[in-house]
Image 1 (cartoon, helix red, strand yellow):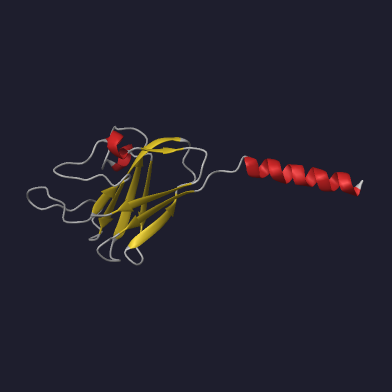
Image 2: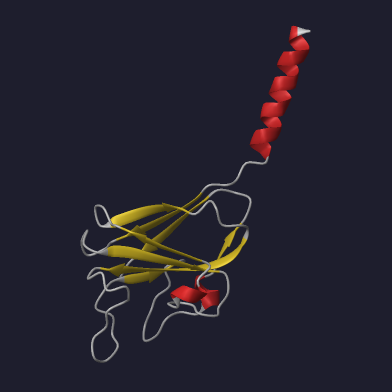
Length: 141
């Protein structure tokens, strides 16, 4: 009888780990300082990308430590997502720009695309979240 209980408990433990949620970790690096917030927006749709907070599927504001953050995104379901990050160093809730619209605070996107005169497209920065664990790195520039 004891052997059957042991085998049954092993089977139950094995079934529980097979359906576990994959770990999705986002790292944002190279902030100017530990001042202000690093704001992260996760978009599941091109509408509102890259900066309309109200159209983002999720938004986070995290105090940087050592000029970076690490964020657990394991609660987002499978799908395609574009992620925007800005270092809101002055804490005003938005990306501060000069009179010509050039950013004065650091920013970045998933897939770390080169940015020239405008934001990259949703498609260029979209990443696939699936059944496997994933680490995503955004380098602010």
